[in-house]
Image (cartoon, rainbow, N blue to C red; front, side, top):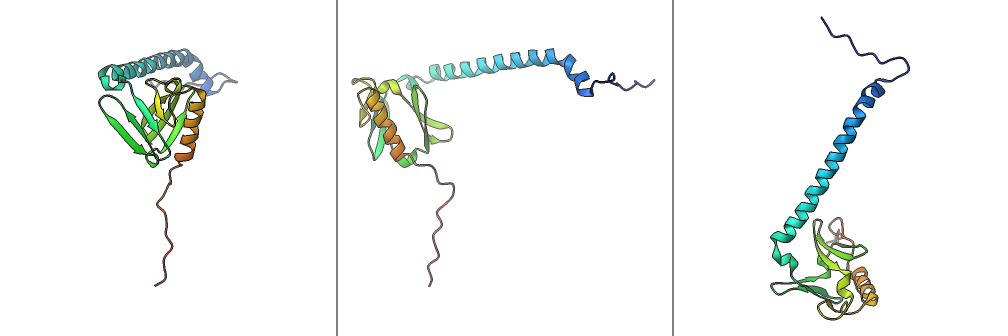
Length: 156
C-alpha cells in the first residue's frame, strides 16, 4: 500500500504546514548552537592567552612618521608604515593590521601615563596622545592598492 500524499488544509500553504511544527525545534537548535559557538570562542581565546606566556609580556610602543617599534623583554618588532595594511579603532584599542588576519593590538590605556606606556610621538600622556597617535595612523597608513601600477609604454 502506497502512502497518500500530504495535502495541506484549505487556506494553508505547504510551508506553513511544515514550518509551524518545526519552529520549536529550530529555536532549540539555534539556542544550543549559539551557546556552543560562544563557549568555544571564549575558551579558544583564553587557551591561547594561557598557552603563550609571551602574549602577556609588557610591551613598549615607539612611533614616529617613519616607523613604529613594539618591543618587550624578549623581542623587538620594527615596521615601516607601509607594512600596515589598515587600522581599526575601537573604544579601547587600535588594531594595526599587517595581514588580513594578523594585527598588533595597541590598547588606548597605554597612552594614559608615563611609565610603561607608549613612547615616541605617541607616548606618555592622555587623550591628547591618543589623538596624536590617531593622526599619525591617518597620515601614514594608506589604503592598499588592489593591483600593480601600470607604466606607460615608452616609444622606441
